[in-house]
Image (cartoon, rainbow, N blue to C red):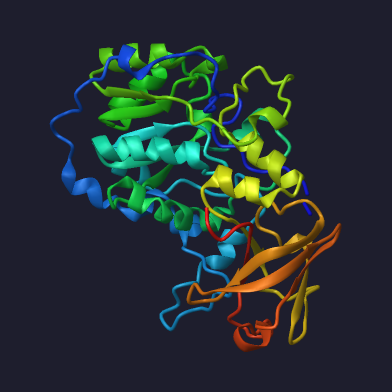
Length: 368
């Protein structure tokens, strides 16, 4: 039950939500946000996270009568850095609270950052693009499919005062060589943010020269708020995993742990770390290599848009219909393909349809 791949890295090793120091919230300066929050920007101009990557996906997607999914094919690229920033995306963050960290998995630790930001102002996640290309990393499959990220962020809305966090993209090449001071200056003067939220072990700036204490100090100098939150700890499996070789690991929830759990096929553990079931998306638009019968669909792994669990048989799964209904299925992940079997397939999925674009499968407990 259980598989591995390599995927997008947002703020990754250079600027991750790592956890190494012990900074208490009470010991840090909490600065007042600027009076001018520019509330008219709370609507967040959805262009910030380009619609190329943020279309809400439910499984068995069908093109609507208005052509609402006309750009979906652009979302299916497996490259990490094949996208461009929206022309005015960065302007929408002005006056908002920006969460800083690595947002590959969008796990419960990342959600806590968004929750804190939403309590102070309009919440944004600041993600970096182009890191793999700039740093020469080998591409690897993302934990969350790019075209599924907005759905995940929408699921955080009830936790964030009924405000959906917006993801804003920033070219990594534009910040790679910035010192900690220059980075904060960019946030303040160029992006116009009124505050930042980060984990207690957050590091930033060229060669990760700055830590959370530096962030608070510099934000104070530039007149923006700095809010540091405690690590979200992995209470369930800390004693069962050895992280001795990773000095950044102190038992906190992390994207590394999510990848570890997926590589071991422990989908209940994955669900606990994510705060939701893991959803795997497959592009079935071109139908090449896909075999479909009344009760099964077999698709090659080349159709995958994000990281699947380890090869094995998974009984506790669901596929998602176009209206969001979850129907039970079993899934067999092997070295070359994904095989989905269910008595309900014949009633809701037509892989031969020209409109059928994406298949979504969820793994793990329904209750998280």
